[in-house]
Length: 380
Image 1 (cartoon, rainbow, N blue to C red):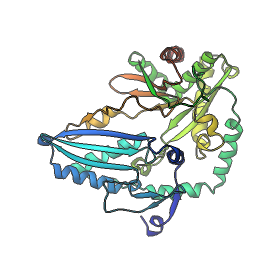
Image 2: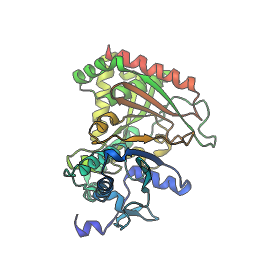
Image 3: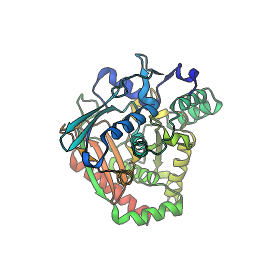
Image 4: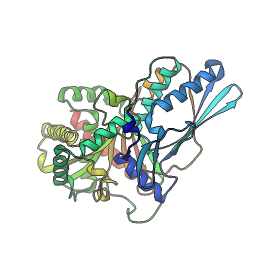
């Protein structure tokens, strides 16, 4: 990285800015705690620590310092183990080495963790680790903000989604305006028996899983709420170049998606609508409408559809066994009203992660049944 790039401060990326604002009023929000244990007989402990250090130093975001105004600057520290928004500690447990991680969502999105793990495996085995061009990415983001395209995308998104009045989630059992600390609930739905048909639909119609479940979820919202229109968001990883695939950071984008009954005559027209919404959403996603005020008043509470990276796949590459030590903190805080998480692993399943403060379990079960109904309709 150039000295010029490393000495300039940059605005936080959109989702990181959202977390930064939330941290002002709740200093504990969006922190995750993860414990991992590995057998000493399976690893070289010093090599393990060196690999951790190499990867932490390779990913620039761990050396960024955020000031009180939300500007980030590259400020590497001698103590790479304990940063502004993370810490890594090793502990001897007899036959085990325990690694305790504390990290905040401000640093990176879900895919970032898998980027990090893959690099860690490479570092431990002495293989090359791809450079992280986080600072160069920040430069491009700031340049894009001055472009004609950025202005055009802003205008298009505001015109299409800036004044949404339709529901963006199934109506809640407890009103959103009642002050509370939302607690997390989950509901798992096994779709393994439909995996082959879902893949066939996606290949035939050029329709990713995200688009299929966004459409099914939007149709389910309409039926659940008794409306002729519904909207939601879906998570796009935002990594569009080879270099961006190696960045640890909050590059993901929450893209709006809307469905109207008047635009759906049959299954074929529904699929065309979903494809159009999906492609247009990506094409205009340079402007982060859903994370921009005043639109956050609506979109912060939108149902969000996302594909979770495959933990099974990334663990296959691990040169030794890692045992995850579960946290005893219960119940977990819900950071979203309702997420529809897609897991395409040994089993294909959907995880409905929701605020149990606002939804009764039977309400989520009812909504999940509607999503399943529309998925079956789409695959024919």
